[in-house]
Image 1 (cartoon, rainbow, N blue to C red):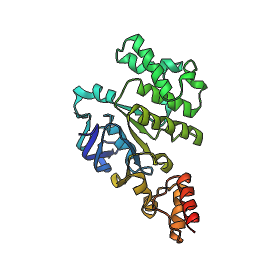
Image 2: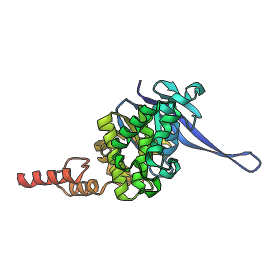
Image 3: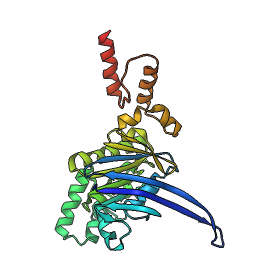
Image 4: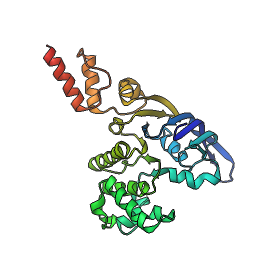
Length: 286
C-alpha cells in the first residue's frame, strides 16, 4: 500500500438557506482514486474550482470523505484515534505563509511543532537547524519573519513542517501568493526535499511549469481525475489541456506549434534546454 491512498473518494458540500434547509449539494470531489508511494513527487493540477484543494484537505484529515476512504500510511483518516499520527505523517503547507508562521523569530517558529510533540530541547534545535538548511534558510534563523519576502516566509513554513519529520508533505498551492522569484525558490526547495531527503511530496498547483519535475501528474476537472501520467505524457496533449482551461508552458506550446508545422520534434517538450537540443539535432541532420 502507498503512503497515501484514496479509494472512490467523494466529498459533497451541502448548501443551506437561512432556515437550515438544504438548497443544493455540490460534489467537489467525485470518485477519486490516488495511490502515492513513499518517495514519489506527485503533482495535482487543475484550474480554480476543479476540486484539487478540497482533495488536499482530505490527505491530512482536515476534511472527511462523504463516501469512500482515505489512508495515510495505512491509517484511515476517519479514525479519530489516529488523527494526531496522521497529521504527523502528512504535513500540510498552505497558500498563505502568514497563516502558518506564529513565532517572533524564524528558529522559534520552526521549533514550535517539535516542541508541541514533546521532543527533547536538544533534538528540537537539531531539527530546526537541519530543516532550515534543507530549505536554504539557515542564515535567516535569527530574523523576524516579518522582515522576510513571501518566498522566504513560505520556505520557513515548509521548514516548520519538515522539523516534525513527516513522511509526506502536502503543499496546497504554496506559490499562489508569490512573485515569480518566490515561486522558483519554493519549488527548488520542494524538489530538493524530494531528491535529497526522500520526502514524499504532493504539490497542488495550477502553474504548469511547477509540475515538470514530478514523477506523476493528476489533472483534475469538476472533481474528477481528467488525466493522469508523467509530465511528458500530460504535456503531449496540448489540445486536451486547453479544453480543461489550463495554460501550457510557453516552450511546450512553441514546440507543439513547430511540430504542427512539419518540424520533426518529439511530443511533450518540457524545457527550453530540451527544445534547443532538439532543434540543434534537426539542424545538424540537415
